[in-house]
Image (cartoon, rainbow, N blue to C red; front, side, top):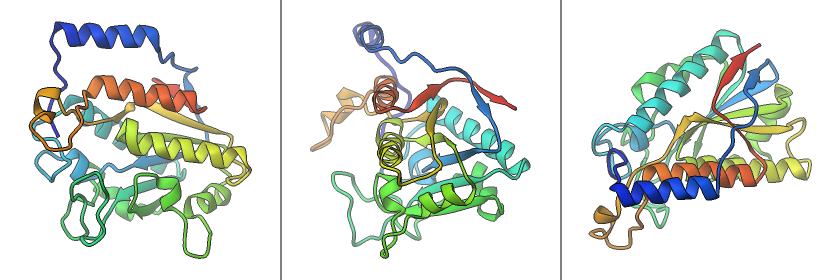
Length: 248
C-alpha cells in the first residue's frame, strides 16, 4: 500500500466535486450509553504498522495513525466503564488465500495481532475477540452449527447500538456494517437498533494511480476519496455516520 494520500490540483478538485455531488452529512453527535457496544475492526499490524506486510503502509500515514489513536481512546473509555467491546482481528491460514488480495495477516506472522497500542485489549475482561478469515466480520462470526458469535454478544449485553471503528472504511468496516444492518432488518441480531460509524475512528489505505499502474492487477485506491466513499455507501445502507462522540 502507499503512504500519505497526496493529490495534484486536478485530483483534489475531483475529490471536492465528489464530496459536493455525494456529500456525507454527519448525523447527530452520538451519545455513549451502557447499551452501546464498541466494535473494533482489524486494527492489526498487517494493516496499520509501517512495513509489517503486503497490505501495511510503507511509510507513516496520518489517517491510519489517527484511527489507531481514536480506537484506543474509545476502547479505554468502554473498558474503564465495564462496557462491552468486540474486536475483529483479520487472520488467515497460509493455504487459504483471499483473492484478489496478496497473502496477509497469516497466523504466526505477527501481522494478525493488535497494533502495539491496543495489545492491552487481549487481557481485558470486557473484550470479546474474534479472529476472522474473510472481509465481512458478521459472516466470519458464524460457527459451524449456525450460531453467530457477534449476534450472541449483542444479545448477551442487550446492545441497542454498535459503534464501529477500524480499517478499512470501504472494505471490512463497510461490509460488516452492511451485513449487520441486513441482519437487523430480518430480526437476526436483537435487540440491535443502530449501527453507528465514527468517521474519525476509521481509515483506509492509499494506493496512488501512478503506483497501481506498475502492479499487475492492482486498482488505484486514493485514500481520502475511498474513505469518503466507504462512509457514503455505509450511510446509504442505513448506518449512521458521526464525527463526534459524547459520554452520557
